[in-house]
Image (cartoon, rainbow, N blue to C red; front, top):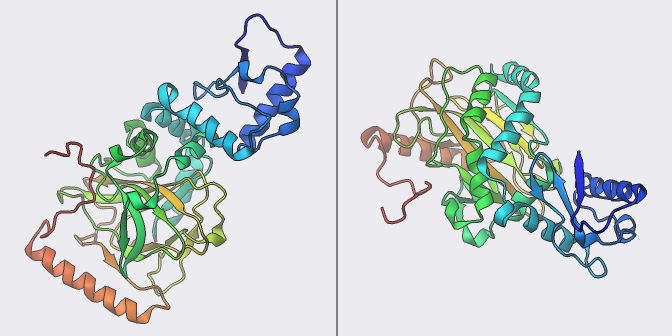
Length: 363
């Protein structure tokens, strides 16, 4: 529900004009910031209004906007910067409040979805996780790819980043909202787990972008955290690219029967959170991107005192080729075997994992 307050105390709106403004703003928010010219232009004193969305508690329309020369794209950018940045930027607790409220509403459905799939690779997802305006603002602040680390091998081809203080603060706030103890607790309960812990170091977490022809081959995630103390048990993937179609590629694929069997495709739909289990048999991948543009994702990983399956064992991240990639499969399997042999000798590896959030750059 939108509450509208007139900033200029000397002026009052007639009921009909108030109704028209309410309808116009509701249309903007529902329609992905589509500018409804006719409705807006006919309303006087636009720049004097302050529009407050109760749940977010942020000011949306306080900026002076000239409707005579603005186009829809400028309107989107201006509103996003006014709403979610500066003094009114939503913080991690407020974002977590929204996540908890949304997930609580669908907790039973998600628990049933996870239970139905857990024999193979347990997963669930929830759409419209955050208010659309906030999800779009998060996407708008994703960095340019050249400011991120490019990983390009036979295993994967994507951009990643974990040093969150190098980027707009709303990205870090969103990443850590998923580490709020209330969010962790509800996810733990949905998955019927005894324990669950977020990872403040962002060991392989943070943000990622994948563009045309980029991919992530089928793989098993490494079994433990960076100190090899706890088991890696859940991946949380929040997708924020508006209007991303399934046929674009970049979708999460889980292979419950192994890479030789057919995969289950989970669309990386805008404003969707997907959660999947990680264990010795949780082969998963990201399908190649087929279009120009970037699929953007915010990633978190949860760890636990117990493995998800009784027969889970320590392993490094291990890649396979896709079913049609016979030669690549041979190479990647040999690569995994060699790296596993090294880890048996050097428990924590011979090269430091650089994909961590280093809070003190001087340490």
